[in-house]
Image 1 (cartoon, rainbow, N blue to C red):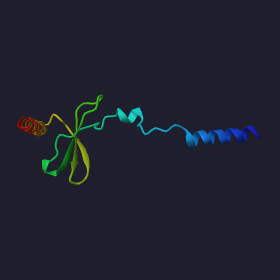
Image 2: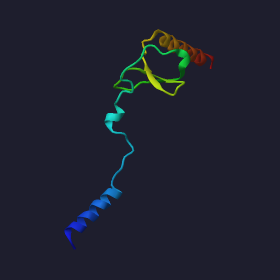
Image 3: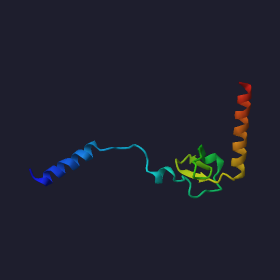
Length: 98
């Protein structure tokens, strides 16, 4: 049998039955979501807030706007700090009442 045919058969077999992984590449896992932040977003335009904390990135806040656009908010913004403080206080009170 021709060596090339055997080699192609082996490569096809390895490709089909080779090891696959659902894990993301390290470059995507360790990447920070927010590369830049904004300070001024009208609060009435915000539909949802996401808080993201990853080991290699600072605390990140992602706001989904009513226009379905996502922007990164500066976590140092005064109104956002007050919002987080109120949310934590509600959590503390709820925990004490249990």
